[in-house]
Length: 200
Image 1: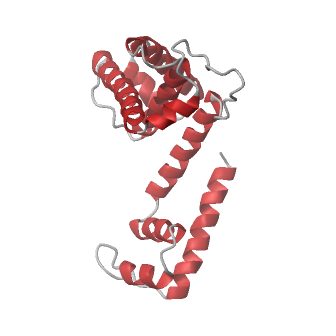
Image 2: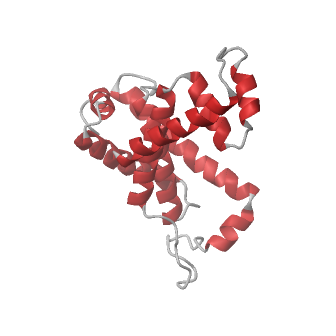
């Protein structure tokens, strides 16, 4: 365990790459130890749980939402997050057993029952990169005004410009604009998002 987890989290929020690497390595080590108690999870399942945990923690750390300030409190929060992710996976399995039946990862030793089954999922590194990119998108959206955030999300979900215009004119937005301006602003916000991702 790092000597001072709170200090490590502060360094992560400052986007120090070595801090993120240390945090990621530590979480993976804790996940490997904690998930030993879940004997019905394969090696691939444990990797998925670790990746999902990191994906969640990247966002939580960036927004300083980890409860506790001492090492014990922070460790307890992360341990609970890992266990919750494992339980979520098991609950999904129970509700949709066909997922486990076709996945081929049920031998108990972490190896596929059928060696010809290809694992087409992204690698752990790619999943970590994708989760960081999603976190960057999330942070950018949160930095926008509420009206811009609503306009952008409504537009990409197919809401007509006229409906967006009418919604923006009402509380809590109280923002009046022409219908044509809705499309113009959407394209500006979209370009802003693309430029932000290209700089990542």
